[in-house]
Image (cartoon, rainbow, N blue to C red; front, side, top):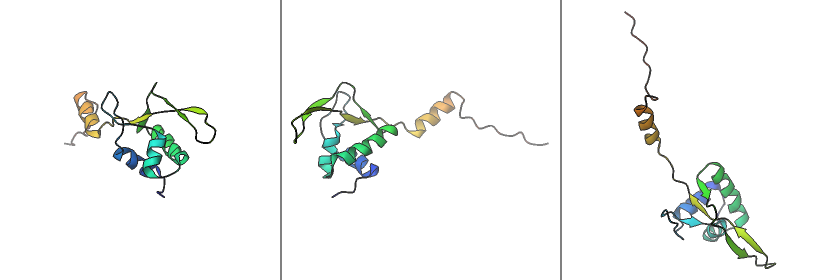
Amino acid sequence: MTKVTTEAVLAAITDYRGEIDTDGRTVFSTSDIARVMGCDEYRVRIAFSWLRRQRIIEAIGGSAVIRRTARTGERYTANLYRLRPQTQAEAFDALFQTFGLGVKVCKPEKT
């Protein structure tokens, strides 16, 4: 069994190839990633919670699916997720320099 850590779940998400949304990004659920990792879905949900707090993944609004549970046959709604586009530090540096926010202040030389 795979050890379920936030890093392991993120690696599984990055490697996962499933349904593609309209933006060209892969869409996945907790059960998709748990199946790929060969582990319990509950532990993957915990990692997803941390990844959402860190703004690495996002739930897709209005894209829920309905599944039936194996034991009771009840219907429940499962969110779909996707990786958030990550901004690069270089992009922020360029913006700060463009708007004069990243200018270093030098002390005047003593004469």
